[in-house]
Length: 370
Image 1: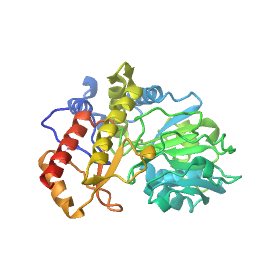
Image 2: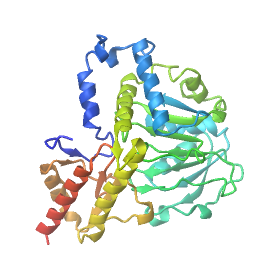
Image 3: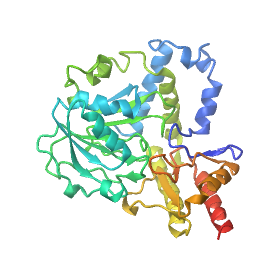
Image 4: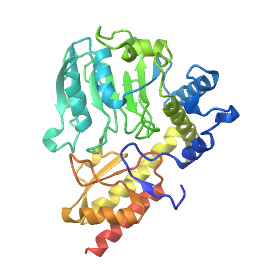
């Protein structure tokens, strides 16, 4: 990353790899010399079909998606999927939720419109700083599926291991909202039936939503489900039942290719990114934990590698901290309005140099006020 370019810690829409942005800029007016930019192409033309097919193949490769899962490129983001999932999977029955933060709260609330949500466990009593142990979950005997947000963007809580529902005595499919940590680590598909995520945090620009769904879950949509949101309809039409978000798919595809090129300690692709992400998170949390000014309240065993919320012990310093950060080229560190404080989102596109620059600034800011 160019050293003259600021480091953007936005939670989403978030920073993208500079290589990807530069390639998109070079191809803006004529993709591969065809005389058209991607935004101008027919979604059914051979040029865009090749972009779409390559993006789908690269995502399948990067996440080792088994052949019995379909990859869908949809619209509406994670918010829309909070409705689309129960419309397709609930059959109007009971749905279990493990509520670990703001996003899983939203998911459970939205599901009330189409199903009967049941809170199997909640971290609310701890202020969403912990994840209830799976052994303590009160699972419904007849749940259509169990929903978790595997990384909570606002509260900074992450499932570092996905639950094994079979070991808990449940046959319910596991649905995960992996919006904010997709492609930051591998996915254990033996435990996951459906995964969804908006692209704008760790993949590309806002506009495209990734849905990866096991084929046996297709074809069970409620009668009220709009045709464009019926997973089977979308799958049968290769995500082109309606005009897909073509440019966002193209940008996601460039990001997939960038990810495939990444190398770290003999690893490549998603495995390389996971190694980097662990190092970045350890650097930032390590500094916060030894600091007298900053604090992260999340249980260390479930701290997010992607979204690091922290507080200044003297909140009167918040404005000065943000102003000084901006002067140092460290952008969008203000925490979510519902929790306050600060938040550094350190997605795949954030290099470790950016995290080191943030730590250096935080150290200097603390020393100046010692």
